[in-house]
Amino acid sequence: MSPTEEKRVEKKKEDFLKTGISGLDELFSEGGIPKGNAVLLAGGAGTGKSTFCRQICYNLVSQGKKCMYVSCEEPIDRIEKSMQNFGWNIKKYKDSGNFLIQKINPLDILRMKFGSLGGSDSATELSYKIKPLVIPRDFNPDVIAVDSLTAIIAASLSKEKNYRVYLQQLFSFFEETGATSFLISETEQIPTKYSDTGIEEFLADGIIVLYNIQRGDIRENAMEIVKMRYSHHQKKMVMMEITEKGITIYPDRRVFLGK
Image (cartoon, rainbow, N blue to C red; front, side, top):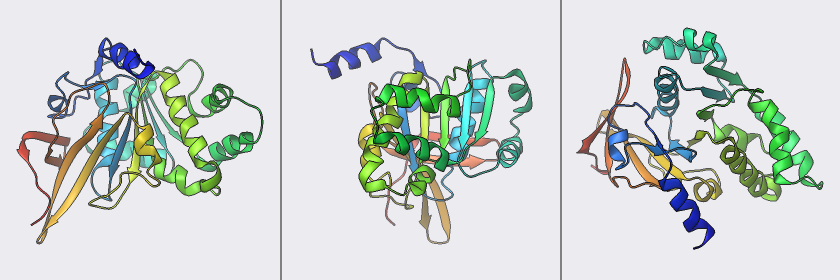
């Protein structure tokens, strides 16, 4: 049995993460996303990517899980306000230590990582070096959301030379944490690729795409699971709605691109 096959068998024995987003878990035959998967959440502006991640975090911390939301651009107070606007009382979960919101400068990570690429440090040593910057000591999150991977890419000044190595180490880092990670990727409204370079798509365990489709003078939200390793999922684009209480997905309402 190959290492990939062994990993697949091992994954089948693991639990699956129930996101709690209405309709989403029903799209998976196992009732959720395999724990530990790194999921690329792709979509254009206004598709609900940040809300999607924040809602998953809120749902899980409400169940006693630990979640970390890493922002590369938006200030913490604005993130908190946006969540409160949906009626999600996050203050008590922050106070309890189960929900952590961090604001980081992607250049800080890139300087540390790229500064070490020419040296003799192993990927494990490099991952250890960035862990204190991203995850506080003694905090073991069930979910990590990064908003966004695109911002980290934009900060890279040596993409062609070092970016593939950096991405491999970054995805290895998330795998080592054991957390299920959601990495936001900014794309066109109707994307033909789901990441800035295309490398991320191969490294990610899963790809979920959110759409904001214009039909005449209205727009229609939709979502699609493009891939999810170690899981069986429905392969269709379905209707998604962003309400005042958050995101709802309708597994039985198919959406088609085009007029």
